Image 1 (cartoon, one colour):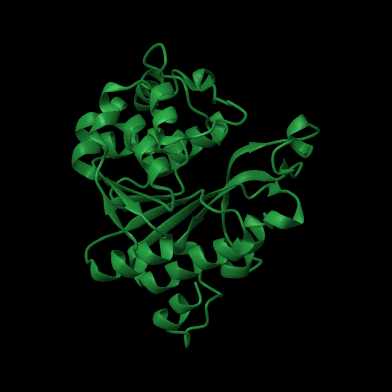
Image 2 (tube, rainbow, N blue to C red; image 1 turned 135 degrees about the vertical axis):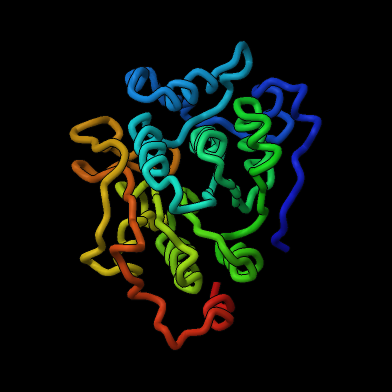
Length: 281
């Protein structure tokens, strides 16, 4: 059953290594984005960088995106000031993007809802963001334990006066991305734009990592988007890794920014009602 959940207050007294152990979260590569090359470009982003590491034991986490990707999503959201009043993050893992989006919520005065099917990831990401921006997180950040289609059905379709930016870094399976993005069709004018990560990702057939193909299936082959994040060429990251055989396609962008003002849904069909669509997800 999908629902909003409360923060685990016991996490406040623990460092991140202890939190990961308590929540049984495994670190794989241990990758951490180095944001220092972007210091001095924006005073707000400088503050986000300063608050990511706060002492011994508080760097026990893993980031999933490049530093350029984090800088790009910050700039994209900042440029939308006054146009959207909520960010919805789909897929949080250990809070790499959450730590950036919470800073946007703090400085831009907008809401942030976190969505994940794993409640432990939600708790870790929420606590990571809280340590940087406690007041904003406690007043404007919520955790939804469930899927994006469930959030659309149970939360957004009953709300008014909301304009959302979706940040999607959840399941990368073609089928699930279709379900996630397809559910947004039913929001009509409540959807401002979509930021979606790992559009350059591939792997073994078992995982069916085709995020970009799902985007084209939903918005058409002529989708209007701005590339965001890093582009890799002839890098070790373009070779299958040891975990799930994942790799990045050379020359392709890490993510896409898709403004709804310049795009339209090609799927689902207008005659497929949300209840019928939701039954299939």
